[in-house]
Length: 306
Image 1 (cartoon, rainbow, N blue to C red):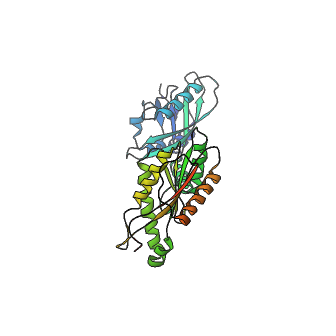
Image 2: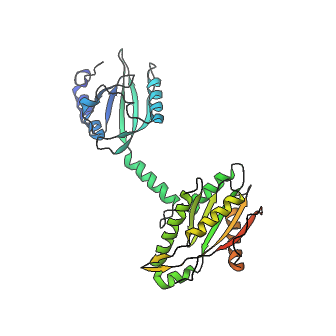
Image 3: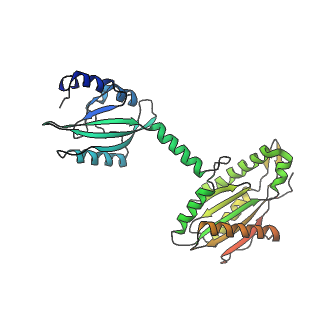
Protein backbone atom coordinates (compact mmCIF):
# COMPACT_ATOMS: atom_id res chain seq x y z
CA UNK A 1 0.00 0.00 0.00
CA UNK A 2 1.27 3.48 -0.85
CA UNK A 3 0.12 6.67 0.83
CA UNK A 4 0.44 9.76 -1.33
CA UNK A 5 0.01 12.50 1.22
CA UNK A 6 0.10 15.16 -1.47
CA UNK A 7 -2.99 13.85 -3.28
CA UNK A 8 -4.91 11.95 -0.59
CA UNK A 9 -5.37 15.01 1.60
CA UNK A 10 -5.65 18.70 1.09
CA UNK A 11 -2.37 20.18 -0.11
CA UNK A 12 -2.20 22.49 2.89
CA UNK A 13 -2.47 19.54 5.24
CA UNK A 14 0.15 17.76 3.15
CA UNK A 15 2.46 20.71 3.63
CA UNK A 16 1.80 20.60 7.37
CA UNK A 17 2.72 16.90 7.37
CA UNK A 18 6.00 17.32 5.54
CA UNK A 19 7.15 20.46 7.31
CA UNK A 20 5.73 19.95 10.80
CA UNK A 21 8.17 20.66 13.64
CA UNK A 22 7.36 17.29 15.23
CA UNK A 23 8.22 13.88 13.74
CA UNK A 24 5.28 12.19 12.01
CA UNK A 25 5.30 8.71 10.48
CA UNK A 26 2.74 6.65 8.61
CA UNK A 27 2.79 2.85 8.67
CA UNK A 28 0.53 -0.02 7.70
CA UNK A 29 -1.15 -2.12 10.36
CA UNK A 30 1.81 -4.52 10.36
CA UNK A 31 4.18 -1.71 11.27
CA UNK A 32 5.89 -1.23 7.90
CA UNK A 33 6.83 2.41 7.33
CA UNK A 34 4.97 4.07 4.44
CA UNK A 35 5.98 7.70 4.90
CA UNK A 36 8.08 9.82 7.26
CA UNK A 37 8.14 13.60 7.34
CA UNK A 38 11.21 15.83 7.39
CA UNK A 39 11.26 16.10 11.20
CA UNK A 40 11.21 12.30 11.57
CA UNK A 41 14.05 11.97 9.07
CA UNK A 42 16.09 14.62 10.89
CA UNK A 43 15.40 13.07 14.30
CA UNK A 44 16.38 9.54 13.35
CA UNK A 45 19.09 10.55 10.93
CA UNK A 46 18.15 8.00 8.26
CA UNK A 47 17.06 9.11 4.76
CA UNK A 48 13.35 8.67 4.05
CA UNK A 49 13.93 6.28 1.17
CA UNK A 50 15.79 3.93 3.54
CA UNK A 51 13.01 4.06 6.10
CA UNK A 52 10.21 3.34 3.66
CA UNK A 53 9.23 -0.34 3.81
CA UNK A 54 11.22 -0.95 7.00
CA UNK A 55 9.40 -2.41 9.99
CA UNK A 56 9.14 -0.15 13.02
CA UNK A 57 10.14 -3.20 15.08
CA UNK A 58 13.64 -3.30 13.60
CA UNK A 59 16.28 -2.54 16.24
CA UNK A 60 13.86 -2.39 19.15
CA UNK A 61 14.70 -3.96 22.50
CA UNK A 62 12.55 -7.02 23.36
CA UNK A 63 10.37 -5.17 25.88
CA UNK A 64 9.73 -2.28 23.48
CA UNK A 65 9.09 -4.70 20.64
CA UNK A 66 6.35 -6.40 22.65
CA UNK A 67 4.81 -3.03 23.55
CA UNK A 68 4.84 -1.93 19.89
CA UNK A 69 3.28 -5.20 18.75
CA UNK A 70 0.53 -4.77 21.36
CA UNK A 71 -0.21 -1.25 20.10
CA UNK A 72 -0.37 -2.42 16.49
CA UNK A 73 -2.63 -5.31 17.48
CA UNK A 74 -4.98 -2.96 19.34
CA UNK A 75 -5.20 -0.63 16.33
CA UNK A 76 -6.15 -3.40 13.89
CA UNK A 77 -9.71 -3.38 15.22
CA UNK A 78 -11.97 -0.93 13.34
CA UNK A 79 -12.81 2.08 15.45
CA UNK A 80 -9.86 1.51 17.78
CA UNK A 81 -8.91 4.57 19.77
CA UNK A 82 -5.48 6.24 19.86
CA UNK A 83 -2.59 4.62 21.70
CA UNK A 84 0.60 5.89 23.31
CA UNK A 85 4.05 4.37 23.02
CA UNK A 86 7.56 5.32 24.14
CA UNK A 87 10.50 3.84 22.26
CA UNK A 88 14.23 4.17 22.14
CA UNK A 89 16.01 4.33 18.82
CA UNK A 90 19.58 4.43 17.59
CA UNK A 91 20.44 7.34 15.35
CA UNK A 92 22.71 7.03 12.36
CA UNK A 93 25.55 8.55 14.43
CA UNK A 94 25.19 5.79 17.05
CA UNK A 95 23.59 7.90 19.79
CA UNK A 96 20.38 6.69 21.42
CA UNK A 97 17.22 8.79 21.57
CA UNK A 98 13.83 8.38 23.21
CA UNK A 99 10.54 9.35 21.54
CA UNK A 100 7.00 9.34 22.90
CA UNK A 101 4.52 8.51 20.12
CA UNK A 102 0.80 9.17 19.91
CA UNK A 103 -0.50 6.56 17.45
CA UNK A 104 -3.86 6.78 15.71
CA UNK A 105 -5.59 4.51 13.19
CA UNK A 106 -6.77 6.30 10.06
CA UNK A 107 -10.21 5.03 8.92
CA UNK A 108 -10.97 3.72 5.45
CA UNK A 109 -11.00 0.61 3.32
CA UNK A 110 -7.23 0.47 3.39
CA UNK A 111 -6.43 1.68 6.92
CA UNK A 112 -3.07 2.78 8.21
CA UNK A 113 -1.65 4.29 11.39
CA UNK A 114 -0.30 7.77 11.95
CA UNK A 115 2.29 8.27 14.68
CA UNK A 116 3.10 11.76 15.97
CA UNK A 117 6.29 11.85 18.01
CA UNK A 118 7.78 14.00 20.73
CA UNK A 119 11.51 13.77 21.37
CA UNK A 120 11.88 13.24 25.13
CA UNK A 121 15.58 12.33 25.09
CA UNK A 122 16.75 15.39 27.02
CA UNK A 123 13.81 15.13 29.41
CA UNK A 124 14.71 11.50 30.20
CA UNK A 125 18.37 12.41 30.67
CA UNK A 126 17.41 15.20 33.05
CA UNK A 127 15.14 12.84 34.97
CA UNK A 128 17.92 10.27 35.24
CA UNK A 129 20.42 12.90 36.35
CA UNK A 130 18.06 14.24 39.03
CA UNK A 131 17.27 10.70 40.21
CA UNK A 132 21.00 9.93 40.42
CA UNK A 133 21.71 13.14 42.33
CA UNK A 134 18.88 12.39 44.76
CA UNK A 135 20.31 8.95 45.55
CA UNK A 136 24.09 9.50 45.46
CA UNK A 137 26.65 11.45 47.40
CA UNK A 138 27.99 14.35 45.37
CA UNK A 139 31.59 14.09 46.61
CA UNK A 140 32.26 10.34 46.42
CA UNK A 141 29.59 9.15 44.00
CA UNK A 142 28.55 6.46 46.49
CA UNK A 143 24.88 5.86 47.34
CA UNK A 144 23.70 8.36 49.93
CA UNK A 145 21.71 8.01 53.16
CA UNK A 146 18.38 8.10 51.33
CA UNK A 147 19.39 5.39 48.86
CA UNK A 148 20.78 3.26 51.68
CA UNK A 149 17.57 3.57 53.74
CA UNK A 150 15.52 2.44 50.74
CA UNK A 151 17.86 -0.51 50.20
CA UNK A 152 17.66 -1.52 53.88
CA UNK A 153 13.87 -1.41 53.89
CA UNK A 154 13.82 -3.46 50.70
CA UNK A 155 16.23 -6.04 52.13
CA UNK A 156 14.17 -6.35 55.30
CA UNK A 157 11.27 -7.52 53.15
CA UNK A 158 13.14 -10.74 52.32
CA UNK A 159 13.87 -13.75 54.47
CA UNK A 160 17.00 -13.83 56.58
CA UNK A 161 18.91 -11.27 58.63
CA UNK A 162 20.69 -8.30 57.11
CA UNK A 163 24.01 -6.88 58.22
CA UNK A 164 25.21 -3.30 58.62
CA UNK A 165 28.80 -2.17 59.09
CA UNK A 166 28.89 1.47 60.23
CA UNK A 167 32.36 2.97 59.63
CA UNK A 168 33.54 6.25 61.12
CA UNK A 169 37.03 7.53 60.31
CA UNK A 170 39.12 8.21 63.43
CA UNK A 171 40.50 11.68 64.21
CA UNK A 172 39.42 12.98 60.82
CA UNK A 173 39.48 16.52 62.18
CA UNK A 174 43.27 16.25 62.25
CA UNK A 175 43.28 15.79 58.47
CA UNK A 176 41.14 18.88 57.96
CA UNK A 177 43.25 20.88 60.41
CA UNK A 178 46.47 20.06 58.61
CA UNK A 179 45.40 19.97 54.96
CA UNK A 180 42.21 22.01 54.96
CA UNK A 181 38.80 20.86 53.84
CA UNK A 182 40.02 20.23 50.30
CA UNK A 183 42.61 17.82 51.63
CA UNK A 184 39.92 16.21 53.77
CA UNK A 185 37.75 15.82 50.70
CA UNK A 186 40.65 14.10 48.92
CA UNK A 187 40.80 11.55 51.74
CA UNK A 188 37.04 10.96 51.64
CA UNK A 189 37.11 10.46 47.88
CA UNK A 190 39.99 7.99 48.18
CA UNK A 191 38.26 6.06 50.98
CA UNK A 192 35.02 6.07 49.01
CA UNK A 193 36.82 4.68 45.95
CA UNK A 194 38.35 1.87 48.00
CA UNK A 195 35.05 1.00 49.68
CA UNK A 196 33.34 0.96 46.28
CA UNK A 197 35.91 -1.63 45.20
CA UNK A 198 34.97 -3.70 48.26
CA UNK A 199 31.31 -3.55 47.23
CA UNK A 200 32.07 -4.34 43.57
CA UNK A 201 33.86 -7.52 44.62
CA UNK A 202 30.83 -8.75 46.61
CA UNK A 203 27.53 -9.16 44.73
CA UNK A 204 24.67 -7.55 46.62
CA UNK A 205 26.85 -5.48 48.94
CA UNK A 206 26.07 -1.75 49.04
CA UNK A 207 28.42 0.84 50.52
CA UNK A 208 27.00 4.32 51.13
CA UNK A 209 28.31 7.58 52.51
CA UNK A 210 26.14 8.83 55.34
CA UNK A 211 27.77 12.25 55.38
CA UNK A 212 30.92 13.68 56.91
CA UNK A 213 33.42 10.88 57.49
CA UNK A 214 30.83 8.10 57.99
CA UNK A 215 30.22 5.18 55.64
CA UNK A 216 27.86 2.20 55.91
CA UNK A 217 28.01 -1.21 54.23
CA UNK A 218 24.76 -3.13 53.80
CA UNK A 219 24.78 -6.92 53.47
CA UNK A 220 21.40 -8.37 52.44
CA UNK A 221 20.84 -11.87 53.86
CA UNK A 222 23.97 -11.66 55.97
CA UNK A 223 25.67 -14.23 58.17
CA UNK A 224 28.27 -13.93 60.92
CA UNK A 225 30.91 -15.04 58.45
CA UNK A 226 29.92 -12.59 55.73
CA UNK A 227 29.70 -9.74 58.25
CA UNK A 228 33.19 -10.50 59.56
CA UNK A 229 34.55 -10.89 56.03
CA UNK A 230 33.11 -7.52 55.02
CA UNK A 231 34.59 -5.82 58.07
CA UNK A 232 37.97 -7.36 57.29
CA UNK A 233 37.72 -6.12 53.70
CA UNK A 234 36.90 -2.62 54.96
CA UNK A 235 39.93 -2.78 57.26
CA UNK A 236 42.13 -3.83 54.35
CA UNK A 237 40.74 -0.94 52.29
CA UNK A 238 42.08 1.48 54.93
CA UNK A 239 45.45 -0.25 55.29
CA UNK A 240 47.39 1.72 52.68
CA UNK A 241 48.11 5.43 53.24
CA UNK A 242 46.16 8.03 51.29
CA UNK A 243 48.27 10.57 49.42
CA UNK A 244 47.24 14.15 50.19
CA UNK A 245 49.29 16.73 48.29
CA UNK A 246 52.07 14.21 48.03
CA UNK A 247 52.01 13.39 51.75
CA UNK A 248 51.07 9.82 52.78
CA UNK A 249 48.33 9.95 55.39
CA UNK A 250 47.47 6.92 57.51
CA UNK A 251 43.73 6.54 58.02
CA UNK A 252 42.05 4.49 60.73
CA UNK A 253 38.40 3.82 61.32
CA UNK A 254 35.93 2.38 63.80
CA UNK A 255 33.08 0.08 62.81
CA UNK A 256 29.86 -0.81 64.55
CA UNK A 257 28.14 -3.89 63.13
CA UNK A 258 24.67 -5.31 63.55
CA UNK A 259 23.03 -8.49 62.32
CA UNK A 260 19.26 -8.28 62.68
CA UNK A 261 15.80 -8.93 61.24
CA UNK A 262 12.29 -7.56 61.60
CA UNK A 263 13.00 -3.86 62.21
CA UNK A 264 13.38 -0.75 60.02
CA UNK A 265 16.20 1.21 58.45
CA UNK A 266 16.19 3.99 61.06
CA UNK A 267 16.43 1.62 64.01
CA UNK A 268 19.15 -0.50 62.43
CA UNK A 269 21.27 2.50 61.50
CA UNK A 270 20.89 3.93 65.00
CA UNK A 271 21.91 0.57 66.49
CA UNK A 272 24.97 0.31 64.26
CA UNK A 273 25.90 3.91 65.07
CA UNK A 274 25.63 3.14 68.80
CA UNK A 275 27.84 0.06 68.42
CA UNK A 276 30.39 2.12 66.51
CA UNK A 277 30.68 4.68 69.33
CA UNK A 278 30.93 1.86 71.87
CA UNK A 279 33.87 0.53 69.90
CA UNK A 280 35.50 3.96 69.90
CA UNK A 281 35.25 4.08 73.70
CA UNK A 282 36.48 0.52 74.31
CA UNK A 283 38.96 0.25 71.41
CA UNK A 284 38.10 -3.43 71.09
CA UNK A 285 39.78 -5.52 68.41
CA UNK A 286 38.06 -7.57 65.74
CA UNK A 287 36.23 -10.48 67.46
CA UNK A 288 35.84 -13.98 66.21
CA UNK A 289 32.51 -14.77 64.49
CA UNK A 290 29.65 -15.11 66.94
CA UNK A 291 25.86 -15.30 66.84
CA UNK A 292 25.28 -12.08 68.78
CA UNK A 293 22.64 -9.77 67.34
CA UNK A 294 25.01 -6.79 67.50
CA UNK A 295 28.79 -6.55 67.62
CA UNK A 296 31.32 -3.74 67.51
CA UNK A 297 35.00 -3.47 66.78
CA UNK A 298 37.72 -1.04 65.87
CA UNK A 299 39.68 -1.12 62.62
CA UNK A 300 43.27 0.04 62.73
CA UNK A 301 45.64 0.78 59.89
CA UNK A 302 49.31 0.50 60.76
CA UNK A 303 51.07 3.73 61.67
CA UNK A 304 50.04 7.09 63.14
CA UNK A 305 48.39 9.98 61.31
CA UNK A 306 51.13 11.85 59.49
